[in-house]
Structure formats: structure tokens, C-alpha cells
Length: 65
Image 1 (tube, rainbow, N blue to C red):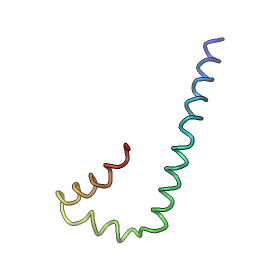
Image 2: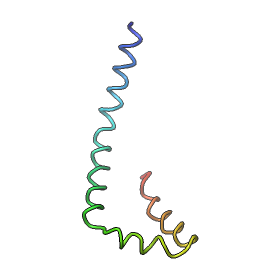
Image 3: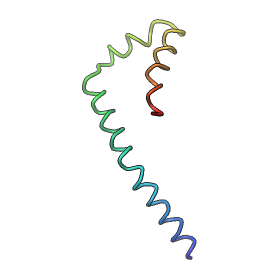
Image 4: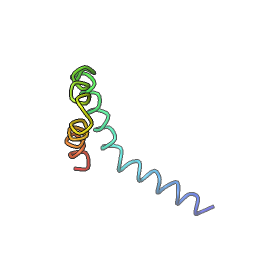
């Protein structure tokens, strides 16, 4: 039974450490939703296969930072 409590405690610790980053991600997503219209986003991603991938990779570069 002790192992179950240890696993639960570790899971709670991981969630506590990640909570700030999850909330920051939700805040950024909310700001993007408010300030970017679907038309402005689709303008960059409908041009062609190569340009769409290029723009998506540029947007995805800062995510791991």
C-alpha cells in the first residue's frame, strides 16, 4: 500500500511543478484566440505545401523554449 501512496504523491508533485506552465500555455492560447482571426491564420497556411510547412515550423520553434 505504501507504493501506491508514493506513486500518488509523486504524481501530485509533477502536477504541481507543471501547473504554472500549463496555466501560461492556456493564457497564451487564449490571447491568440482573441487577437488572431481564423482568416488571418488560414492566410498563411493555405498557400502551398512547402510554405505552409515552413510557416508552421517557424511558429513551432519557440515552443520548446
